[in-house]
Length: 268
Image (cartoon, rainbow, N blue to C red):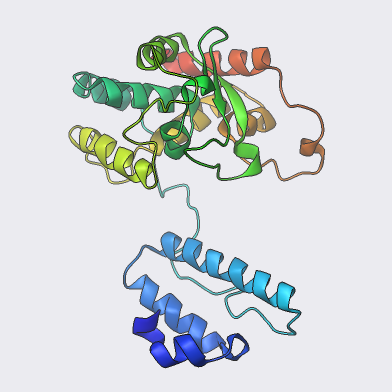
């Protein structure tokens, strides 16, 4: 920001003297360095910080970062493509020599979890006896949203792989020690993308495509949207969804088993 505004404005100009022009200038600078969706996330953080300051200081101001137009930002069905069954099989074969990559890929494919959620797993989060994965805040990472805190059934293949990884670990030990750290998910993404790009050139297919894959498979096996959202940790967006303890594990497992087997795909 100092590069844009100069040290005087950064250090001496009062908060309430920020203008819409300042916000627009920052947005334009960020767009020269980052993708539109990344700019949108950054501006969102600044907007939240400004809102907090305005409320806590009792200021009668408009938030200069509110409703800022960012050309090219926003989710689109074509931003990323789901990875296909054939692509996944080729990728798993390609990465078979790397047990860590294989465990990541199968866990992500089966659970539809976010990469950061898997990177920060502790051994106690992997319930091998009941074949469950607990996605919850711990000493290695927080969670993206309140709805991200959940339990997800494990497939037989994922259970077997995670059993090998967790063998001998203390309850609080990280499952993936190399990646259970700040920016660890970035490092894991880079590692996995090297394997993926070795066999899949389409830029719209990324590691996050594994999450899209499960979403599509749940949809195509007539899984109720509310159940699909609970499995993936999406916000339900309704007051009613905050009541009760959610779907029974048996119901979730049955829905996921149908998705794993859909179209003859690998029951990974």
